[in-house]
Image (cartoon, rainbow, N blue to C red; front, side, top):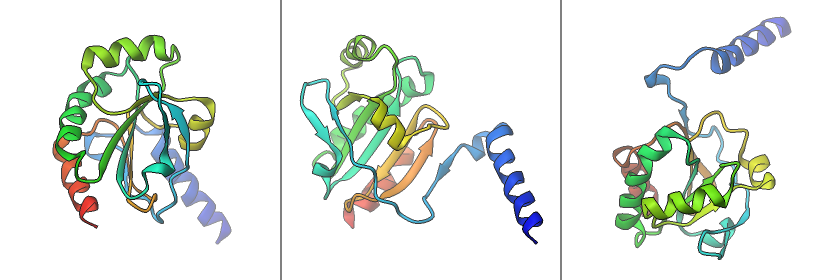
Length: 171
């Protein structure tokens, strides 16, 4: 029986991490048990300190991205638009870049794109708490109680996110 469980577990792990994913299998999941989102503090592009636990009571969309990432570049305009629409409805978008060049790459790109939501650059502590990332972009949706409701690996659109956020904002 133990051997069967071990074999099944190994098969699932190999399938998840080795086999290529189709678009329909794009990694999107709802956590089995809602875990508290790890708290973190990072400096924003504006020079303020963003601390996750200070935003309890809001739905937080935490987007892990990079300037070199094609899907990230495609989803940012949707996030900008979504933030304009939902920022007064207890929804906060926040972007954390994993660019190795840090602010020297992120700052000019964020200005060029006119990103209107808080942008930060990941440090080692953040990456340990939230990583390793199976894909860039990866988006965590954290409910008003500070628990992870949803994790999406890969590009997300406004059409996909908005209904999820509206439902969580009403709770």
